[in-house]
Length: 128
View (cartoon, rainbow, N blue to C red):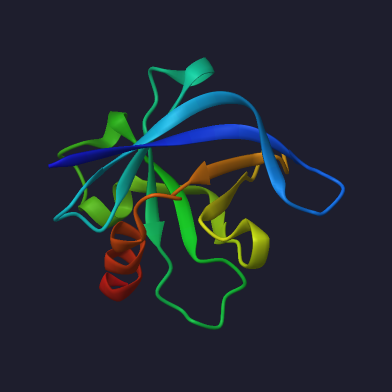
């Protein structure tokens, strides 16, 4: 079974709560998979993966990676993944959101909403 989650551009209101401005993509997650795919509206041909971070001492909870297409079948799967950003679980009034940060884009306002599926999040964290 596949679940779909919203990726959106957001901003903080006066109380510090993140509010949605507009949708910029979506994430798909299969119940039995530890990774989920990220699809952005302006980059529809490239699919990113959200991979759980395994080191509990890092200041992020996920890596954003993409698979290098040109090297498929020539090297191992681990070598095919290129890290391009991070994802951080938010807490407090913004719990249920993952802040997504790409290394090159310099954005600080893109979020993945998990608000109605904490089971998916817990499965991902336990698999790491």
